[in-house]
Image 1 (cartoon, rainbow, N blue to C red):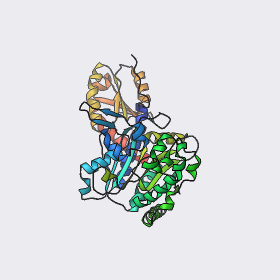
Image 2: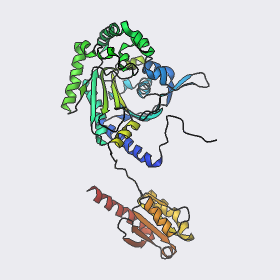
Image 3: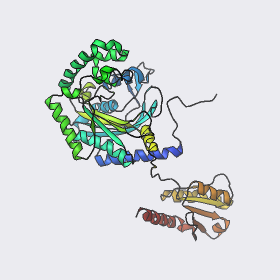
Image 4: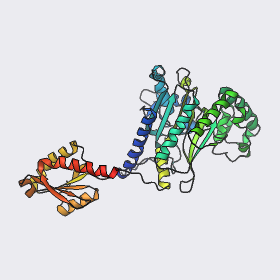
Length: 431
C-alpha cells in the first residue's frame, strides 16, 4: 500500500526548514524586544472553548473545526486558532493576578481548519500570534500593530497595506446591530443560509460573507463608524494618533469586521499589494477582544492580539523575490583515508562538535575524490584531511575550500586552529 500525505497538509523538507527556522527565530527576537513571552498550549482543547471563545456564528466553528470524541466520551477539537487557548491558559493559571501587567504573550505553532485547500490556505498551518491582556490603553493597540508591521518589514517585505477599523464598544455595537437588522432583514431571503442565520445573532458577520459579498446591500450597509459613541470614537482617534506618531501608514475601512465574533473596538488587517501573490492578499489580522476573558470564565480583562500564517508569509517573500540570509553549509568536512584514520574519526568529530564547529564526514566509503565532492556539495568552508601518513606523524591537513590554501598542523591543535580561523573569517564578514 502506498501512503500519501493528507490533503491540505505538507511536508517541510530539510532544504525548506532552514527558511522556517530563520523566520521563527526572527519572531522570537522581535518579541523579546517588545517584551512578549512565549506560551505553548495544547494542540487540542475542549470543543466548547472554541464554540464560546471563537463564536458559534463563525465559519470556523460552524464548518471548519476538526472535532472528535475521545475514549472518555469528551468532545475535543484540534485548535483552529491561538487566541482562545491562550486566554484559557490566562484564566486557568490566574495570570490576571501576576505582578507584572499587562500580560504580553506570543505563540508559534500548528493550527487546524477543515476548509478547501488552495494556495496559501492549508488544513494544517502554522500561526505566529501575540496577545496582550490587562490593558485598555489605545497605545498597546498601536504597539501590537507596530510589532506585526515590524515583523514583515524586517524580513524585507514591501508594498504592505495596513487597514484598520473600529467595531466600537458594546453600546456602539448594539445601536449598529439594530441598524444592520433594519437594513438587511427585508431582503434577507436573497442571502445565503449562513447570513440568514446570522441576521439576529450577529448581523455584523454578514459583511464577512464570501458568498454574498457582491450583493448590492453590502455596499450600502450602515457604517459602524457612524454609530461610535464618544468613548469609542475617542479611543479610535487615539489609536490613529499613535500610529501616525510611529510613522505607520494605514487606511480606515468601515467594512472590515474580521472573521471571529470576539472582536470589538480596534480591528485591523495587513495586506500585500502587487502582482504575483494571487487572490488572497491578506497576510494577517487581529484586533481588540474586551469581553473574551469573561466569556471563558475569567475576570473583566481587556485584550488585543493578532495572528499571521507562516505559509502565507513565505508565499509573499517568494512573490517579491526575497532571499533570506540563511546560514547554510558546514564549517568543515572530515575526509578520512584508510582504516586506521577511520577509527580515529568519531573522537575527532566529537571534539570538533563540542567546540561549536559544524562538521560532517563520509559514511559510504568513498575515495578521496568522492569525499572532496561531498565536501563541496555541503558547502563546507574547510576540509580536514586525515590519512595514514598524517596519522603516523600525528598531524592533519587543514585545507580552505574557499581559497585552496592548506596547512599541516599537529593533531592536538586542529580544534583550536579551526576555531580561531572561523572566528577571524566571520569577524571579517561582519565588519
